[in-house]
Image (cartoon, rainbow over all chains, first blue to last red; front, side, top):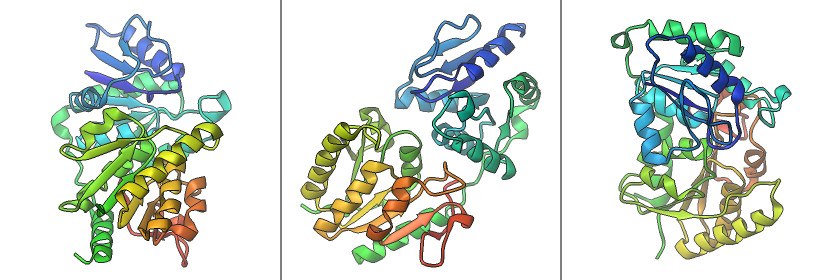
Length: 163
Length: 149
């Protein structure tokens, strides 16, 4: 299954539409589940839901072969921790897809760190999905997260509590 | 009853990042708070308190939110408050001064080129003031001690 999420609020038809077009050209038809928030739910070639609750959302990411998402941090963190590859299409403030360009910044930085693949245009999305689907899942390793920050905060809090 | 830690944030990315800090509070008495009851899945066995979502663009809701956050802080009198933002986290940390809480602010990594607005405003109230991008750190804070990425 390919899981698509654009968050639970603002629509992002540029992303969902591009994935639907990609799905339309595949044979057999791939299993794609999209969380579309306030966007359209009537795309013909993929399954759309407005929002998934916490458990269903976690299950969708854990069961995904690939995550295609806007550059929101929640889904990316969950996917990376589970070793699920991520393709991002950042929201563009110029097109009115978000208030500002923080998604562009996040995507650029994560791409630089080698954590994700970024589609800088919706026209690149299809070829990036094709490339990712051609990569055998066994070639991927779940990421080992650096715990330095969590340990630092834990030590600091315990220090203040006198534990 | 005083709790050890109040972990509080807005939903979405703020909460997603806050949940990554929960292992730091293992064994402590923690109260959790956000706006979405569905996030109870993130605190198995813990108590999740719900407040009204609000931001600077929704001033009336922000008043309701402020009242609810104040009530949480006064009820649990946390020794430590930890937040990843946004406005409700800032409010919790300001109210935390009333009960002598030690306050931790971790600015989200979802903003790369500058700190969040609430992150910039929280500086005088935060005892531990952290960012997740080295280039945003300053000698007198915020500091960089690693990232959740």
